[in-house]
Image (cartoon, rainbow, N blue to C red):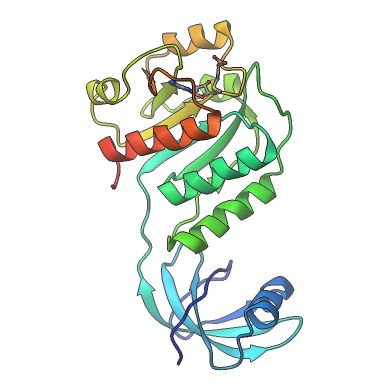
Length: 241
Ligand code: SAM
């Protein structure tokens, strides 16, 4: 079998000896775009079973079949870190989802806040960005991208054992605040929209026992930059970096 250069996410269960049918789009990508043929190798992962080397058994214009050989990586789960963010413009929202998946977020939750710019998201498109990011970065896990939900509603049923890191642009000191909050094995980061959080949201967040407020420095960052910065700090203090 030739060396595998392509990583592909599939829905099917993966195990040695398992065959995996390809959708029309996957067949077009592998055989039309990447010019693979029968006998060529690809790496497969499904977010549950780890990564497997597979060989093209059948190649057609509208479909195909891959045959799984040995496992090349076990499933590697990220830390139990969620990213909550208020959706912004399309390309910047795509960037946040892509970077969160690359940086090891376990779950991505778009939230509607008082000043959120957009009231709708394309969850399926954002989930596809998370899959592409995992394909590209060698990950074996794909974070779930949830549908847009109201921040208020989410906070009202917040799990008591999960710390919430409120990125508050009107404070100073991130690392010290995180370290002082104690170990966080389950956490979530909250990033606001372009207009920031409303006074009511700020007061509510500050009053909640599970909230830790952090600053990301003296400059106001764009929401997408803030998401990357907060993920970096959390990963370096509590995560798997
Ligand atoms: N309303 C703010 C303003 O114009 O002053 C800007 C909001 S900022 C573009 C979007 C979000 O990124 C904020 O709600 C916050 O969660 C996060 N953020 C940006 N800069 C930050 C900082 N220096 N410290 C903490 N959070 C920050």
